[in-house]
Image 1 (cartoon, helix red, strand yellow):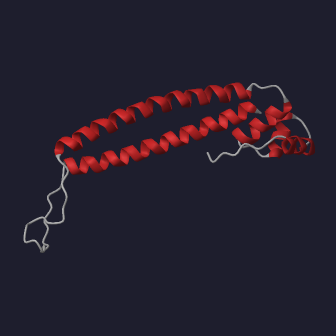
Image 2: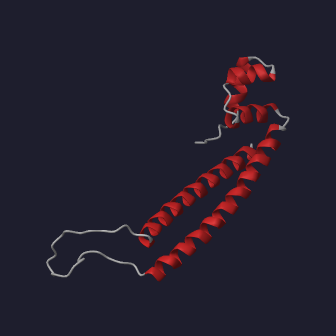
Image 3: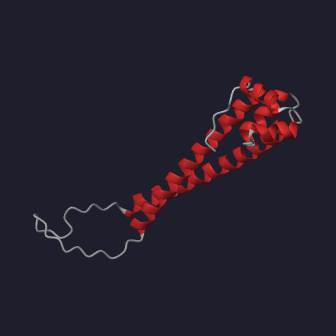
Length: 144
């Protein structure tokens, strides 16, 4: 069952990387808006008497530097994601080829998301026997 645990860990790593990429993309959009600002008309009185009081500006050189860092980090994450997704597909293929009944039941139940009745029909065992095997095999916790 170590194969299923490793597979589960790999799926979680992929989820975390996808979340990280999503966060970096959102940050890049915010920086892009700061680099190409829409005209802003503020009809607000300030206590200092100076126009634009209360607004903060980030120097363009800092914004460009951060944007370049984001793009480099995003490209690294995309490269790693591509590799991990390839490993995931290879693991799924190998797990599908496992011979033991426990492995087959766990794979079909946790990876393929088949109901026990369908597993019993596919493997040509009784539903009761597959249910007992399934109860013996630790369930893989996945959210994907």
